[in-house]
Amino acid sequence: MPSMRDIKEKIASTKQMRKITKAMQMVAAAKLNRAQSVAQDYAAYADKLHEVVASIASTMSKGASSKHPMLAARPVKKTAYLVITESRGLAGAYDSTVLKYVQNLIREKHQSKDEYTIIVTGKVGLNFFTKRGYPVAFSKADVPDVLTFDDILGFAKQAVSLFNKKEIDELHLVYNHFVNAISQTLVDKQLLPLTNLEHAPAQKVSYVYEPDEDEVLTDLLPLYAQGQIYGALLDAKAAEQAARMTAMRSASDNASDIIDHLSLSYNRARQAAITQEITEIVGGAAALE
Image: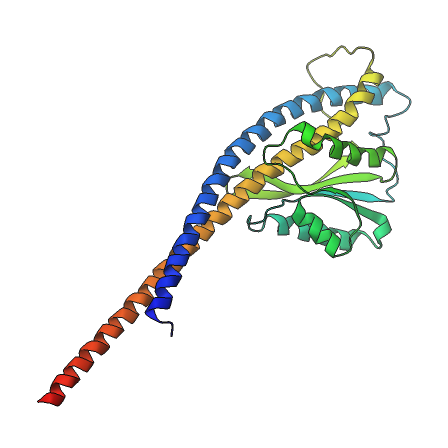
């Protein structure tokens, strides 16, 4: 049985750990507020961009003799999975949910490594895939908490260029979608080809394009795809901070439970020691009579 000194030291170290987890919870909460605000603001822009791109794509699909390459589906010989994870850990099951899903998906859909490739953000995902021998086309290990479009522009261009160069035939985004501060959902979204544009509902706004729709679409589609990657990273960053805040709150609660249990053990040990001392005194007094 641990001594009272050992229990007292354990209580002190657990209290110190609780201070750290509470501080990390507060930091994650502050970062969550900022990440959520940025993600929501960008979502409004992304929705409008989707409306414009869908308007052009639907018009061209009716009158044009050929589709833009990014809109045209082709036989799938190779699939790329852009997997969004984080780098610092301490976020509960945030990463394991995504990584296990991708691992099971690859096992079910692909027979060899020639049929797929991985694009990954975050050190956790990069280490997971490289250690297990998965083919990783390229990666971005560190994604800043305050993310700008310029931070990921080169990465997003590289991902989109794989499809344009026909090195892959489809590109999927796999990440955790932010629902609220205590909930995230897994998203597996096909980004390329952009098959969700041509069947968009008719828009009430009529757009005038300069120089013409074909040239505008040629420039706009890569930007739209890159923006979708940026939006997914913003969404995943908000989900990451929410997961970390929840994990640190759970850690703080568990530390409090441990402190209560140790305090009870300490009081019992102290009571037993006092009882033992009283017994020895009484026994000594009786022996002198």
